[in-house]
Length: 437
Image (tube, rainbow, N blue to C red; front, side, top):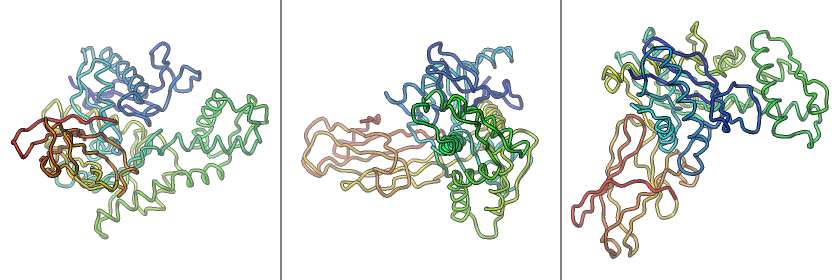
């Protein structure tokens, strides 16, 4: 059995087909005991929201280690619940995740002793669940705890066809909580000596609880700030909504931009809200007003929709129908030219899998050809995410222009990149690994 896992910033879920084997499982980890802990537990050894820093190499050791603990915990729970030994998984990732971030998730699963059968973008997973019953053009607005994705998906031809996707890998509910915490500290004139990391973590937890209470009741909430040696802070609906609009304005801009750039003016998609942060009725109302889209409402809570979709996708992978039923897209892939500009190899929102071939040659006398690879939309490579460097060894020193190579770059169904190089001089082909400098 292949299970589907929604590995979330705040909470994670595992399931298979139509069944979820867990509810929301906190993604927080105690790094001392190497165990999953509850969401609001605070301490120097408690790590949360590490998913936003997911990467490979030395800097990614903590996110990868923490993710592996959560993945293992989920699989153990699912094995107990289902009565079957589970080893194979499909994992959902933010659509904006780069090759290195996807590789980090893959590494975390392997560290947990699991076999990864595929990755799927979170909005695509959500749309798989939503579009089982609704065959309309949809916009998936996915705002979780750590990342934002927006995807246009067209299921009208009978499959799940991703038209385009965009988002922000560092904007979501955590940013909103941080903004409210900053306002509380400023309004209450808290002295710096009381602003310890632990006190700030406690304040954020209290703000989150108050925020969720206000979403349900609409009433002001009072937040105990005794640990800062100041009176309680009053969170009003006015402050809540004003702060929400300031923090999440980029999500509306990206949503409107994606629609304008990829749909005809007479195409009217419907919007589905996904992710824990969209449980807020103020946010949903505001996004609908700004975009003019009709919402698709579900009885299921929004932070379970991706999990439902990835569980269904896992069944597709098991049945062998995933690659024919789901068409997804990739981020822009580019290389750096000799003045630091981005030369696009794979355009943004290109259907995957995709293979592109380019000819490169050496602009100096050398034995090694170095090609820097990036993902991102900026024309300046330094503003994009560095993926790695293709290092090709000619085996001998070549004069300028004598080292022509044909580079084949492939982005697979999982959004991961593979490379091969053919030396035009001797027609020798090698698979090349990316070296991260």
